Image (tube, rainbow over all chains, first blue to last red):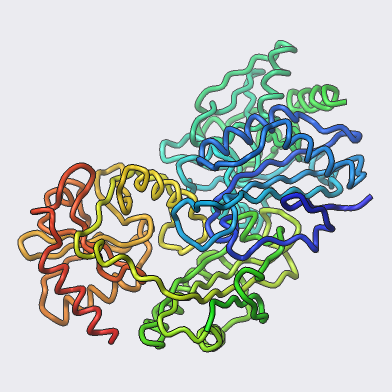
Amino acid sequence: MAAIAYVNGHFSPIEQAVVSVEDRGFQLGDGVYEVLRTYGGRLHAMEAHLRRLFRSLEAIELKHPYTPAEIERIIRECVQRAGLVEALVYLQITRGAGKRSKEFPQGVSPTLVITVREFEPRPPALRANGARIKTARVLRWQRCDIKSICLLPNVLVFNRAKAGGYHEAVFVEDDETITECSAANIFIVKRGRIATPPKSTRILGGVTREEVIALAGKHSLPLEERPVALAELRGADEVFLTSTTIEVLPVTQVDEEPIGVGKPGPITQRLYELLRASVA
Amino acid sequence: MAAIAYVNGHFSPIEQAVVSVEDRGFQLGDGVYEVLRTYGGRLHAMEAHLRRLFRSLEAIELKHPYTPAEIERIIRECVQRAGLVEALVYLQITRGAGKRSKEFPQGVSPTLVITVREFEPRPPALRANGARIKTARVLRWQRCDIKSICLLPNVLVFNRAKAGGYHEAVFVEDDETITECSAANIFIVKRGRIATPPKSTRILGGVTREEVIALAGKHSLPLEERPVALAELRGADEVFLTSTTIEVLPVTQVDEEPIGVGKPGPITQRLYELLRASVA
C-alpha cells in the first residue's frame, strides 16, 4: 500500500521513476495530462477523464498507440498495485524523448507516466471558512481548453496569490470577464441563480464542473453557462470553485472584499452535498 | 569526443541522463533555458546568454544557488569534456522535483541540465534559396520575453507551418503587427532600411538579434526597432531571421507570396557575412 509510478510499462516507487532529460515533456512542455481520484477505492468519472484526455491528445496532434480501454486498464492496474482506498491519480502523455527540436520527432514513442499516491483532503477549516481568491490578469496561451502541461503561467499566478495570503487566483480577461482559476473552474450565485463562464478556448472543461452543472439541472437549481463579469463576481451572494481535488469549495473573499456576508453560502453547501452523495 | 549530458553535477552520455517524473520541468513547464554554440571550440556570446538566463530565473522567481560564474564554469567543463569543436549547448534550469503542486515547493533544489552535442549546420541550400515562412495567429502566453520551457504553442505552430512546406512560422498579433518566429527573431528591409519589432513582453530578446543590431550600427546600415505591420512584412524587399543556430537566414517567401524577387537579398547577405566575421 504505497505510492507508485508507472513509466511506459514499468512500475516503481515514485522516487525511482525517471524520464530522459530529452523527453519533450521536460524540454518543450509537449504533452497533456489528467488528474483523477478514487472514492472508497473506486475511480471516479473515468469516462469523462478519458474523453478529455483523447481530445487533448488529438488537439496537440500527438500520435500514440493507445485506446481509451488500454489507458483505463493501465490506470486500474496502477491503482490496484498502489492499494490505496483514497488515491490521487496523475497521468501524463508526452510526445516522447528525442533530440530537441520544435519539429515533431519521427520514430519516437510517446511517454506515458502515471503516479498514484494517497489523496490528501483539503483542511476542513478551508471548506468551513471558504477560500480567499485573488484576481489576475490573463497571462496564458490561447488554448486553455487543452489540458497541456505548459503550466508556468498558472504556477506563477497561483504563487503570487499565495504570497498575498490567498488560496487561488482567478483569471480576468481584457474585456473584464472572468474565466477560471489556476486549478479550478469558478461559479457565482446571485439571488438563487447560478452562473459559470461557458466553455471556450479560454477555459478548461472541468469534469467536476460538468458534474455540478448536471446536478443543478437534476435538482432544479437554476444555472446558466454565460459570460460572467468581474463586477458580477465581486457582487455575488456566493462564489464557489470546482475541481477533481477540491470538489465544490466555497469562496468567501475576492481580493480585499468579502463575498456576501463572508461565509460559505447555502447553495454552495447544497451542491457540495449533492456531489458527495453522487460519488458515494 | 561525444555528446554529453550534465544533470546536477553528474556527467553521462545523453541517452543515460534522466530526471524524476516529478520534476517540475516535466509536469509543469516550470523552468527556463538557453541555447549556446561554439565557433571553432570557443563559446559564443556567453555573457549575453548568462545575463538573459539570470533575468529569466528572476522573472519566474526561481530560487537557486548559482552565480553566473558558476554556471559558466559548468558549461565550459561540459564543452571541454564533450571535446567538440562545433558544439550546440542546451541548458535548462527547473524548479526541481517534488510532489506535484502549483505551489512553489519548499526545500527542493532546482534541476540543472546541460547537454552538449555536435552542431549541425542548416543545409547550404536553405541559406542559398532562403526560407519559406508561414504566418500564424498568436497562441502564446503573455510573457514571451521569458525564455521558459512552456513551448507547446511554438511546437504546434512550427509543425503546422512545416506540414505546409514552410520552414518557420511568424506570429501575428491581433493588431496585425508581427512579433517573432517560433524559434527566431525577424527583420525586414525596405529601400535599404532595416526594421525589427522592438523588445516587449511579446518577444524574446534574442542574443543574435542584439548582435545584428549592433553590427548594423557599427557599419552604418540604417536600422529601427519599431512595430512592424504584417503588410510591411509582405511588401518588404528582404526579410531575414536571426537565432543562435540559424545566425542570419534569408526568407524568400511569406505564406503564398515571394519576398522581393524571391531570392536572398544583399543586405541580408551583408549582415550574415558581418556576423560570421565578428564571431571568427
